[in-house]
Amino acid sequence: MQLTADVPLNTLDFCDAFNVQTIPAIIAEIKFASPSRGRIYHGALDALAIAGEYLAHGASALSILTEPEYFQGNIASIRAVRRAFPTAHILLKDFILSELQVAQALACGANAVLLIVAFLTEQRLRLLYEYALTLGLTPLIEVHDADELKKALALNPRMIGINHRNLNTLEIDLECSTSLIRMIPEGVYCVAESGIERKSHLDMMATRGFNGCLIGSSFMQHDHPGHALQHMISGDDDAG
Image 1: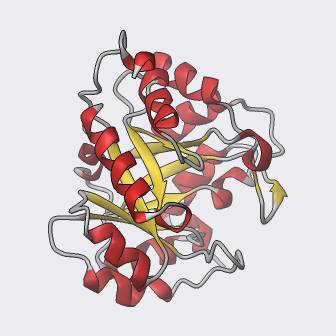
Image 2: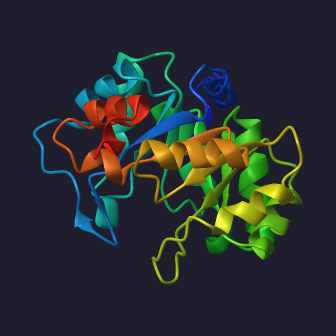
């Protein structure tokens, strides 16, 4: 694809983010708004400043929303963060439907991309998954139920995300990952997504066997999301 002709393939392995002392590793998300909550962040920091706070306060990786309409994201944010933090692990999060979007992820500096099983045919999912691999990117394959997980496992992926949010109803059920994670073979990195709001939730996910937790809204509702991350790791958020 022409977009990647002059862009070096990625050599930064996103899965290295799980080789940390913090269990589960935290993928801290920069998300200014969401379809379920509208505007989330009301502080004064931009994406670059938030990324710096996250990395300084214990994030193993970053997830950056680039979808502009519902999440008020911008792909330029990833470029800025990559320039400032050359070794940071960055997941580009969007409704990825095309090879062009995957190529743009590489070009802007991401080293992982989100592929949502619910939004893709099996053929399209495999095409985008394999294309991402050719660019050196690590796909995070997102599922919510057993049927979607079966489709994800057919790819033999390195990384699967279990979303506690039902994308049809937008409701969250933290129990849905209990049975799903048992169906995932050893050696696959498992990421818990949505609904994780306090240290006790982190501990719950660690007990279930998750390698990482992707957390955004509970941090981004604070003026200083990185400080909220630090409080969650320390358990201060569970006080009282």
